[in-house]
Amino acid sequence: MPEPIKSSSLPWPYVSPGIPDELFDQLPGIPMTKRETRLLLLSQLRLQEDTTLWDIGAGTGTIPVEAGRLCRHGHIVAIERDDEVANLIRTNCDRFGVTNVTVIQGSAPECLAELTTPPHRVCLEGGRSVRDILRQVWKYLLPQGRVVATATSLEHLYAISETFSELQARNVEVVQSVINRLETRGNNQVFTAVDPIFILSGDKYS
Image (cartoon, rainbow, N blue to C red; front, side, top):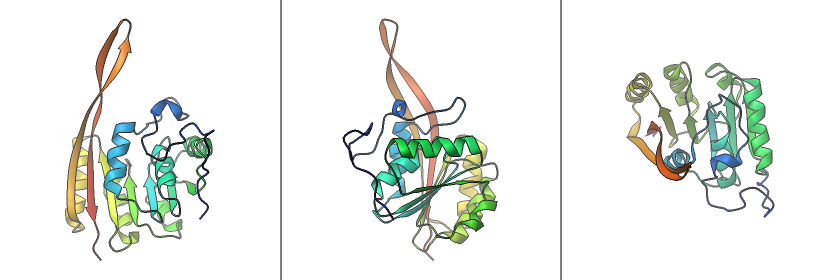
């Protein structure tokens, strides 16, 4: 696979992850994985240079961009059901010179059967049928693979946790992010909370 472009002219020329949110192109109402949460997700994914990653519900494309930069010889598949959002992901990949991301416009789990390269890692960022998506993902996931999923509601937290148990996932971890950012409001600097999120991860041994 082609390597991401390296250039000091890019908006974030550093090799370290954690691109500031404001450097991404965004659309009103389209969710973005915030920088601090993104760092937690990338840490849990345990990526390697040649990892194949499926990002389901890629939204603005922050995870594909960051992962594409880290997995220089890997392949990132970003899945989004909305055509306009899929184009936003492509725009952000171009913006940061990332060339190893393939954007799939489709609905999971139905579109997963069209993918030809099984993943080492899966990042599941939402989805209307999270149980069905996770079950289908598990069928394609390579042995020793890993799934990292996010939950913003009690219902999704329960659904992911229960499905991990059903699938006999190993080394299951659950982390809740509690993050505050310093922001300037008028003449004062105040701490503002980033919406909390649960991050669940589990390994497939065979």
